[in-house]
Length: 102
Image (tube, rainbow, N blue to C red; front, side, top):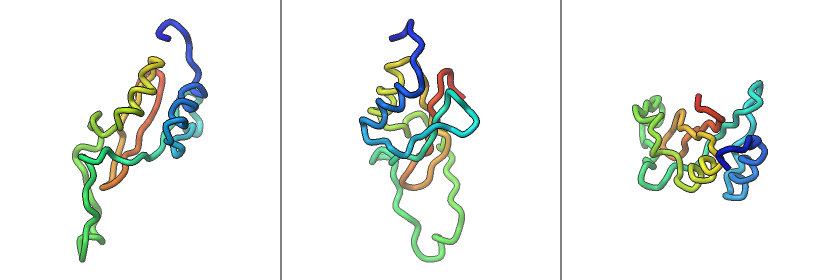
């Protein structure tokens, strides 16, 4: 697949087949998609309780490539595209899929 130009629609079909329906085209960018997906189990954090639930949570690892689920990464990179973690909360990560990275 490396020599061919693969369309974003092909990538989206592959990720939808894996159940990542929350990923969709990014408005204003023809070759980019983004959305929130569940974090891999080892990176999830329990929701804050008590008064802590009113405080904003800051995660220093929001761009960590390990936050992207392995099956999602494999499906995107199979076509020579890039998937990156761009933000997270305790249970989900926002990913961006693009041809050459963000």
